[in-house]
Image 1: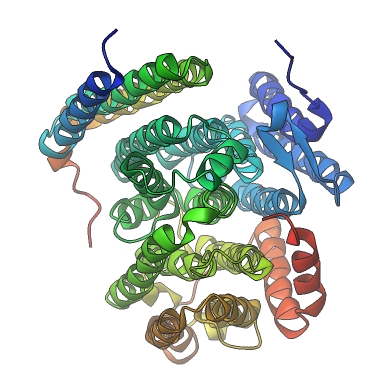
Image 2: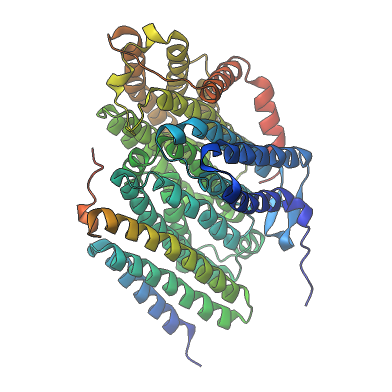
Length: 483
Length: 100
């Protein structure tokens, strides 16, 4: 029996970050309660080194573990998003955890484990890896969602996320079993070969693909698998919500894009309809439901459902299965733009949140324009970016996504998308109006790390909104020829 | 040898019982057990296919699924216990703090 080529160097960033997280769990035992931010900074250092390892692999195209994992332009870009989201989340957590009396050392290792799962998801070339990576990213997130213990809201969010997450992964596993039965393979290459050999119409295979999409749909919070999202986002500690709304969604889409474009491309006319329907439902329902929300966290939860719809618009190939490298690039660009803007938004939410209260209403932002003009200006920029108005990265990302969908021949979906953008303007701009035009206390606490996060994301949102060219070219050249 | 279809039918029935259990039962522990049943339904399918094709990929997947299920049990039971300490109940209908 030939021994598969492990090629561990290709997966060195995964191995390093897992080892670092394990070591951090132990090291945390010796860090006294009064110095818990040290654990946070150690986690940050681990992420910096991992980022270095990922940068060192820039431009490489290699496979590891006998072809089950791949390092290529796509995975590298996704890794940047995950590591960046992780770093900003650590910065936001440093003060947040102390403020809310949640300062326990295991927060940071759990965050790192989840990031390892996300990175593995972007590298997956085998359905077994997709499943394992999904669980590695989810299980720490279940714990993090319930991290506000003994607050009942947080525990409830944790349990709800756990039960529905486990339910959805059962669908995913069963789908993998059926696809394995129909194609005799779990690797993307093997599935692709079986499909090319003409088993594309087997009902077993179609049922399997459907179940896999249900499992993924839960993870990325696409309608009609979104029911858990508002409750979990609302109940979890806000810093966890920030991380999971960005990281888990991006990871889910990374795996979805890989499975659909890599393994199931010959079935594009079948799954194209499903993805387009999910996208349409998510855009409409997410945006319409967000209008009625008074709680900022719930509004952002519905907004995140809507954004899942916009990303799904990018994940489409035309019915002939003709590959446009455009789609994957647009999806990544959108996920990156969403990560940047959304983390900034959540950082502002953290600044406005009062100690002991894990939620804020839109009304709490009144008067912010008078007391904290810089903060309000940053929030205004983030809201414009989430809506998709210039001059922000959100505008460029939406433009990019809609262009990809037009090339794939989904004109109706693009029209629907533009209409839902108009709907979303209502509730995003309402925040701006409340901040600048309503009288209120406008209280906000801005520790240094949080302030830095807000500045960084605001500058990124603005600069890439005005000069998107270099970033776009970098994304396009990275994913060219992969799918 | 029993044809693979019989095993598939068994696994489909198990999966449906599990899914129904998740949807109709209100006790968090029973819901959790139903999820385990769904995972094991997939395991039956994996083993049956693996035997039919004569290669080991499916059986390896079963080992991974079992491991992950064990990890989920650890986290899930801890959460159920934590909730029980606060509420003295694990009925999911009473988890209604979050709504809107």
